[in-house]
Image (cartoon, rainbow, N blue to C red; front, side):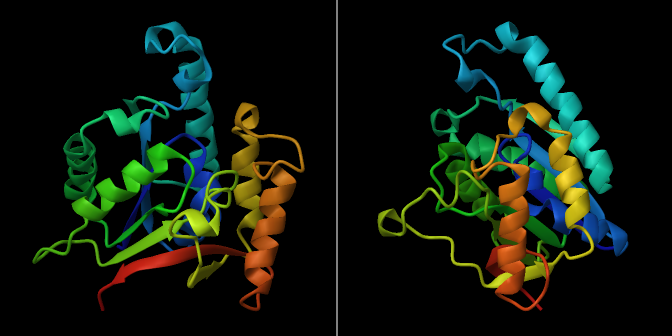
Length: 228
């Protein structure tokens, strides 16, 4: 059975970036494991001590479980790296965390953040995944894809770094409804339109990405590597 590993920085990034692809892969018989590395809450307050946010973190974990149940994810693991402060974590520590999950599940496909992003955690995790997926002999990862996260990736101006220019698409016409339902399970994380992290904006983006490649809805990626 084929296995994929989605590696995301924060709870809801996995759904925003590739939720419909997860649903499609599951429907096609894949095992899809999800790793979320940062806790996703403490940067919103002057109180950065996670012990001061236990209720919020618990609620966010419940949202993540409910959302991934909707998508059919095989497993979800939430870690506790500091939210929006991963640039203060030794990169090797992040690499080792990712490598442990790759060793555990031996995925042939890994999906993670694109490097051209305003969120520092997304950029740090991208670099860690690149290191963890370096193509050593007998390494299980044969395909590496980078996704976009609305309200983060598109906010990186094209003139300031590597811009997200998709060249790999999943037709998710039959799975977009699952993605939107999974996002609703993350209710407190969503925003009102016209914020890009709104249900309407996510639906419009899927429609636009689909229209650019001749289908009703798509999730877009940049291909990092494909070994055939």
